[in-house]
Image 1 (tube, helix red, strand yellow):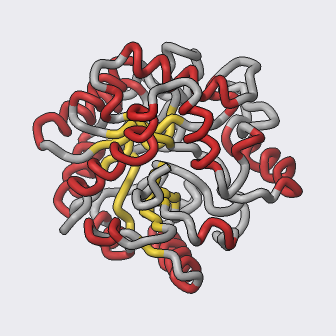
Image 2: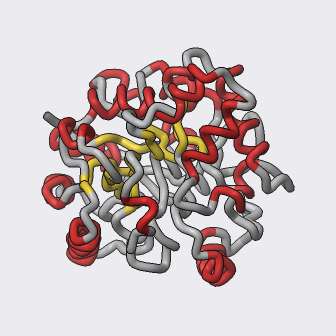
Length: 321
């Protein structure tokens, strides 16, 4: 691998989701850039959300982690973090405050329908007037729109706005619905439109989102193959968006899984199961392992695009100067 390049993960966790982001020492020396969620998606009070972002930044900076705020920050060596808001504040009018706090990526909805549109549990819900105002706010301050977790119709409505305004857009962590019919996965129309607009698509390593019963990295690679074979131009837009840990805290895995299952899938609609992550990837070396495994299936040029080049191209254009 080219050690001079930065590897990208469009959504990962620096520690188990129920713990503070205390970084594994082996992760600090890696030249990688991870989009991380700075606020638990179940927090909705704006003051509490902003306090969470500030505390998250303080903890990361105390460990020497670079928080990416502008294009030039991508040139720093070592671990770099872009802050992602997985659930937006409940009302419009706050994007400037979150931008000032360090947020550079924001999603529309998390699961259910909200003031802005539909999450994946509301796939036919339309983007609302408030949702259009939220996207307009994001564009003004210079944020990247993330359609992960958004329902299909809300995503398509949002992509129409993106197409008119040339706004940067990603789907930070998803799978291909055409490969496996799970509600968390994105339909081809959404994937194709995102690629056509120069966006990024991160494929996650969630076992239950990738396959009915395959818990191996082969299921992850099938989603990569499906998109490469069915979405025009995907070779220039595919990335990793693992939605998994960059640590080896296996002792907390079962406990954290039970907590998240109760929060994420109380009705069993997503068919969440344990292990919810591909076991061999639960490591600070996650991206290195994925790179090596994908090189056995795809040509090296394609793998370098997925792991390095696509993310570098997009963020160099999308982040503020």
